[in-house]
Image (cartoon, rainbow, N blue to C red; front, side, top):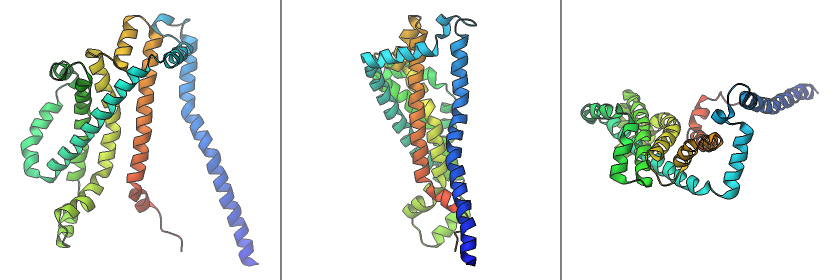
Length: 280
């Protein structure tokens, strides 16, 4: 009887907590959406009375322009081109940043030799390299991929470099004493320690890859969202400009969501290590 008396309140408390958690999720989404909805409503109202519509268009006009672009199929070639440039540039930049950051992080001698050169090159505005890349790779996708990759590379490189250098030296020595070889040291010590830094660099690099591609398409391109936005701006089509920007925001949002899921999947051990003791 006593056990039943204690189980009932415990079960009721658990049910209340689960109900409160399920009710909190829609509230959190509502709080996230409120600033955006308020901004759109203000924009819709201010376009005309406060600012001329030819400068900022209206959310309803932008939505209509988006519908026209997708219904007519006009935007699909631009989407395909920019999407390929973003994916290839991002992957190449991340791969180069991980390899370079790990190599220099593991070797203090290499770091002393090459870090000044990397820092000097990092200080160059990457936008200034766009004309040079167009000369080297042409006006096709190659120049945009190169520009996006170089912008992504440095963010990932420095995060990986910092992650590898932050590994406790005593932990490395202890692992070596236990008989681990270099491959085991890499997979069981350095990579897990650098994984949070890698994921941080990957997430920070997403908007920079978009910037690199769009700047390259602004400079010279035969196709792409950057070219579409540039042409819309040249023809005084603010709805078209904002439509292109909305599509770019969608690119960044989707990529950020995917990166967040990958981070949660790869770094599950952090959540497990931070959890409280299991009930016995």
